Every structure is written in C-alpha cells, then in structure tokens.
Image (tube, rainbow, N blue to C red; front, side, top):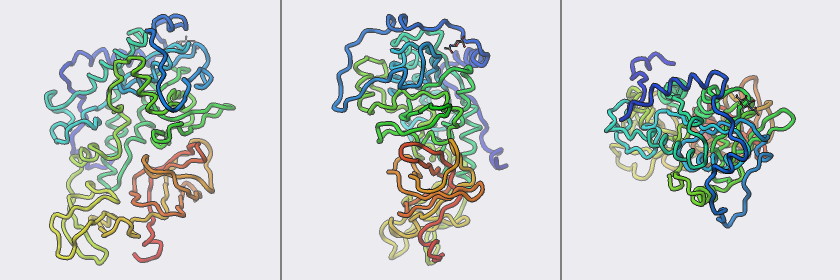
Length: 455
Ligand SMILES: *[C@@H]1O[C@H](CO)[C@@H](O)[C@H](O)[C@H]1NC(C)=O
C-alpha cells in the first residue's frame, strides 16, 4: 500500500439506524470459526414438510430443469452454506437447495453497502462511508431482513441463518488496493478481487471444513477425478465466470452454483411462482456486484488525491486541463472543459502519459486498438497453458480469439483482431471453450499505433 493512503480516511464500521446487530455479529462469527455447527441437520423429510407447497412453476419459453444433487456434485446430507444477499438470484439459489436432502445454513455478508449499491444517489454525501444514517441508505439492514424472510419462507430454521461482517476485510483486501490502482492511473476491477478475497476467501474461512458454499452466481463447477474446474453458465448473457476467474481450485472444490443451468428469466419466474419475499427485488447488489466502474469509481476518486495534468493530442498540443488521472479510463469520452477552435466532435481517452492524458478524435483510432496485453500476476485455476484460447478483458464483451504464451511468470495474450479500449489494471480472463482457465490483472498493453512504432 502506498504511503499516501495513510492520510486518507481510515476504516470505520458502517453505522446504521440500529446498532443492535453489532454485538451478536461478532459473537457468531467467532462461533462459526470454531468447527462445531450448532443446529441439527434439516433432514429430507423435514425440508419437504417445512417448504410451503406451491404450484409447480410453469414458466418460460426455454425448457429447463431444476438441479439435482448429482448435477451439483453433492451427496445426500451434505452440509451446504448458502450465501444469500437478499437479491433474487441468491434467494432462488436457496429455495432450489432447500428442496434437496441437504443440511443447509444461510450466511449473509455485511459489507459496505452505501458505496456498493448502484441505487445510491450519486451525491458525495450519500456515498461517504460513515455519514449519519439519514444520509446513507443503509441497505444492508433491509437486505438482512430480506435474507431472514426468505430463509423463513423456505423453511431454514432461524438459528441456521447468520450474518458475518466482512466489511473490514473488504476495506483492506479490496477497497484499499483498488484505490491504490486508481491512484496510479490504472483501472482496477474490484468485482473480480472481491470474489477471490471475500466470497471465496474470507467468507469461506467462516465455514467449517467439509462444508460447501453455494452462491447465486451464474457459473458451473465440475468436480471430476479430484479436480475442480470452472465453466460458463448456460445463460451466456448472465455468465459470471469472468468475475470468478481468480478463484482458486481449492475454493472451487467447495463451490456450488445451483443457477448454472437456469436462464435468468426463469430465475425471476421461479421466485414469483414460489412467492419468495424477494421475487420483485432488483438485480442483486451484493458485495461482489459493483458493476463496471459505476458509482464505485466516482466514490473512489474522492479518496484519490487530485492530480493535475493536461489532455494532449497526438500532435503534442495541450488542449485543456483534466480532472485527475483517476477520473478517466481508456476508451472513455473526454469532455473538454474548454474547447479549442477546430476541435469539435468527440474525443476519447487513449493513454495516460505521465500526468497527461492522450486524447484521440475517433473511437476506432489505432491508439485505442489493443493488439496485446500481458499480466505479471496471472492466476491459473489449474496448470498454465499456451496456444489458442478465448479471452475477455471485461465482463460485458463477447469472447475473442487470442493466442497466449508464457514468458517466465509473465503471461502474454495476443489479439489477432484488436480489442478496443483496454485499460491497464483491468482483468484479462482466458477460456478454453466454456472452461475458464484463469485470469490476471493487465500489467501492460500494446496498441496498434505502438506496434507500428508510431509512438
Ligand atoms: C455436517 O456438519 C456436521 C457438523 O460440522 C458434521 O458433524 C457432519 O458430519 C457433517 N455432515 C456431512 C455429511 O459432512
């Protein structure tokens, strides 16, 4: 961590209207970390009788089936902890598992929701961490109430529904490193780190050995011959393997993704057919769903000391001052405060050069076309690979063909068809067909104009 961070705001636990939860929280996180699991297992018959009877859901144009134990790689009586956020995906995940003969517990992660909620109004006050309750939405309290309501509705006893507070882990393991990246002018992806560090890191440590962790991710895990591999979900639009690409194989050995085979519209329809209290909730905004930049980026820029520099053109002309390196990402529109004559039209951020930002006049400019990226800290889920793969440099993009090679620890990914606007600090993920091979933070990029030696 860079020294500059020390001068910024330090971590303070979230303050909400009610403080009643804080103490029990600490107590039961401790209880969880001791191996004993207090409550008796929910047997198959008990599960069946406590589930409210519902009309069997008959939605959809796309046929699908609900997961069986075998689909999930589980055996009867297995201990499964379900991470429930209060969103519809994790609620349906819980309900799907409650119909199977498993011993279920529910965990809700408290984190730092005012920042993470994309619903938060974009005012600095509402985003500040320790503002009084009247200024923050304190959505975690509502989420926690929803988690308890859903758990009740599907018949999980209340003593098996727990809240763990991971906000300090989130602060030190995701937020501060992300600030340091923005500070250095790069564009980090905290969502990817969060899955590695929090959900499949700190949270997993709260779960006794031998217990599985189920989440509402759209992804699939296969366990065969002692190996665990990560695969794309059936719903390609919702597939979240990009966000899970840094998770270790050891964590995948314990991961359960019941939504693997379900199209997203079916998940919503199931929630309604089952009358889950969260059926009408918006998309889950749990700790790992910050979205690309979004409010998080705006928020983080408050923590980054202002830097000063200029927008410059390829001709080297200083056009206008910018608002600080951290406020811009490669590919973004550059809105120039003062426009010089003859500079009409759209300008795009192409590259950060020292404290200045190179802007180019067209979205298809060679300075925005990335032909190669490399990562010095690549995480392979299994063994490293070379050769033809599929790659993504962000969650929302169609995978592209790429060629990967290894130079010692460095992993170099070449794009035969250039990829537009790839910032350093983002994550490059690799797939072989539908199997995710791993990912790495992009340490450096090469664009078409650099390749041609024009800069
Ligand atoms: C489930 O967990 C309990 C307590 O941790 C343990 O006694 C039991 O053996 C576990 N069941 C299975 C099938 O692993």
